[in-house]
Amino acid sequence: MALSLLISARLLIAISLGVTRCSTNPEPDDETRLEATGCSQEEISAGSAWITGQFNAFGNSEIKATYGFASEQFRSGASLEEFASVVSGQYSALLNLGSYEIGRCDLIEGGFVFQVDLVDDQRQNFTMQYVLSSIAGQRGVDDATIAEKAKDLRFDSATRNS
Image (tube, rainbow, N blue to C red; front, side):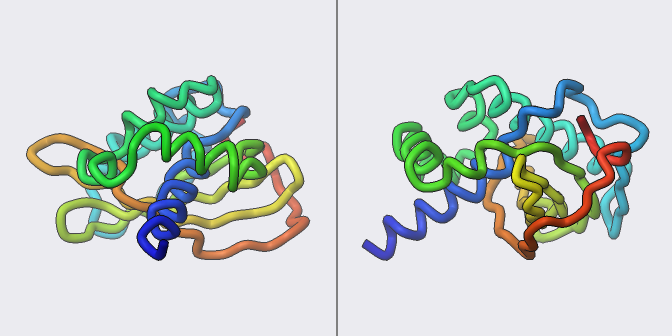
């Protein structure tokens, strides 16, 4: 049961990061604020494009495509059906995200951690740590965790992807 909850939690977080209906541009625009600590501009660009691609797949309700952005290691521990079930059953509120901003990038062993700020359609703010691996040139989402959550934050949509 604990393993099932762990898989559910990891799936939720990976899914919640992949969901937004407001991003129509697959490439981060000039207004996207990125800070790097140890990440090269190429790593920031590639990681941001990967995250944005997963967000776009969720925005288009393409669960299989969204699942495809997960790392091979993540997919080996959770089936597409488990992934979809967690999204639709336990975390449906996170499917209604209003916007996102990809921020700081940090190097870790075997990959990168990106800070991603999300705002849902109820104006709830979520700051997440989005972990991407890069193994033998193959990128993938390994994990994501909620770092902060606050309700009813004011949000300046002019500085966010929309």
